[in-house]
Length: 75
Picture 1 (tube, one colour):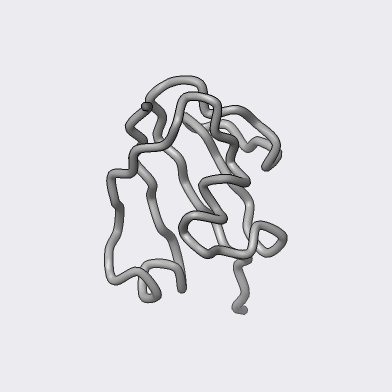
Picture 2 (picture 1 turned 90 degrees about the vertical axis):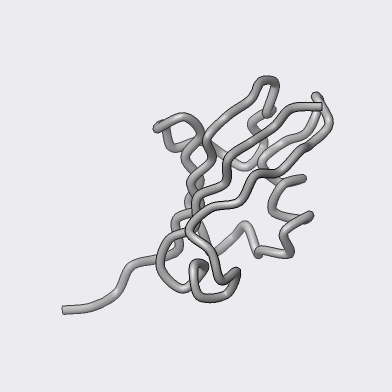
């Protein structure tokens, strides 16, 4: 199992009531698996793993910091 720090931004902070959570996932998990576990639609967010934007198919093969970035709007 790998232990990940998941950072929430924008409306996801309000949805989860937290800035970050610690989450354990099996060694062969992907970003998509993480989104499914958190019940987040992966098509509406960008994901950064250890500071780098990645596709949802990326394997989470080590302990990581994962930022979930919803779309930004405003003016």
